[in-house]
Image (tube, rainbow, N blue to C red; front, top):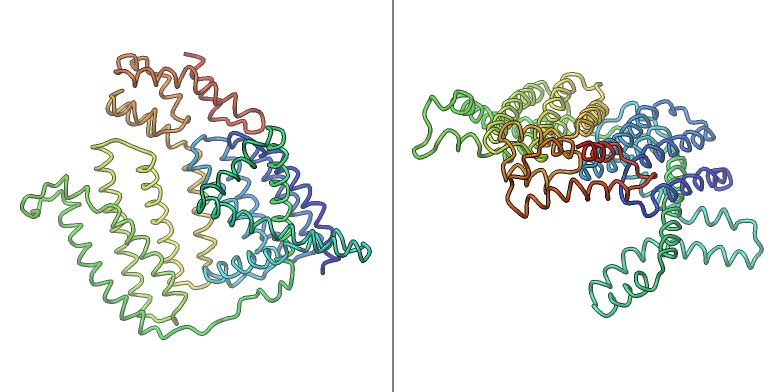
Length: 472
């Protein structure tokens, strides 16, 4: 198998080279993200075709998803959105490789999670293999060099874990490490070290992931496992269904009716409506996970299906209650990125619960793929809509450029909000130092950030912000 996988060295090296060139010492994320995603996808398809897998076409939706996530990276400057995009790209890469080499036709959540975890551990076991391939034709002396090279490769991840721990445990040792790796290295040397590290990381990641997935793919077929007695789930679900039903009646009677049925003494309707959002959000998420777990762990039962349907219906009311409370809160205190994100998450839970309902009554429905691609599509809409800009526009239109609104725009929102900020000359009426910080941010900071990003991390949101402040 090792000799058959030697051709992986070339696409792995090309992937590592591109990753190093695009991300070595850049100031941010921009056009380098979709460019690398395209290179990674092309190299994966080239390498996978050499194994002649039967399921390569099943990987294409995941490849399209990671390309779209990478493209959205350069359409926003919000770092949280970009970090979630990177996490999504990582997950989609694992699923793309898993789907290509495994028969996943009958998998649900448990099957996908098990296969992905096994792929990660299998890939870690392939870390020494590239070095063994490179040195396999040497003499006896070079054979010893092979093992030295393998040992050096294995020491890299260990050092990345051990050195920070030792540096934090002893001040003298930590100071010594800073002197070696920071002060005594020139700018050119740090660039070389960073470039080599990124190359090795991407090279090993590409090679080991595909090598691990292609190694004994038949062993990855999920075996049907015996499920538990449904009476356990029926009893627990019945108790929860009764509690949820009572809670939902209270929501309809007091919250959605505007408090006309009377509230506890000393409790105002606005205070009653605005409390409990995060508790209800957590319970709604827990219900979605509960329904998925019950359908996967217990034998099918009509009584269980009915109770899970009741719980799902109550969950819709819980989600509506959470959304109503958040809407009232936004109406009183304005819009922020986190509040927009909470509303998006509630919408995602609603759609996911709809798919869960379909799965309760049709167990052949692919709930995992439904939830994955619904989440992907909704996240792309959320990220590309630039929620920071939406929040800035809403607050400015509703409250005007007050001190609180100005602070939110300046200190809490990303560069995505700059085109909105550039419209307001009334910032000159703000008290110092808020006025001075506002003016410096628009006249100096935005342009400096755009210049620092450079060509490799060119970002369209930052480009639009720079043009907005220059056109004032």
